[in-house]
Image (tube, rainbow, N blue to C red; front, side):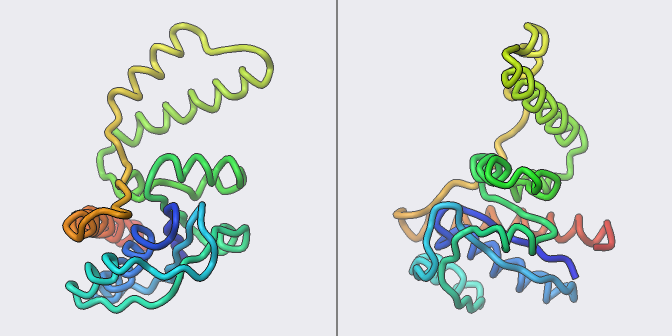
Length: 194
């Protein structure tokens, strides 16, 4: 059984929404998954936001639970870690470098465009090269810097904005964005036979 961990900031809006949506949508497709969520900047036990629960209720989804702080145990438990923003992804990889091969943003992992995925891979290689050279007192060549800037401009944003503190309509829009990414995620997992 594949174990998927969703990650956002406070684990009270986006990641619980993604967790609940994936559970329901996987169940409807007859796919067995273990799903959790956590936050990179939270404490255990905070309630899921009222607006998130309302958004889920409108979809006939019950969600129980409270916030959970990101732990090494959660990282080790997960086969796949899907963050809501590239900032969350970078934070996790920085804190847990061994997780690099299983951490993606949700929209990045769900993306079906092979050319975009190839650009992302090249950009990540250039970032790694830049960090290695910086650690040794060097820097990227002008050509490498130019290519990195070109890739950054070309790659679409894979971030899902935080609705925290916004109106109910913002939570509803966020849930629609997450639902579409979760649908693509399930399609991808089904094609891979995972």
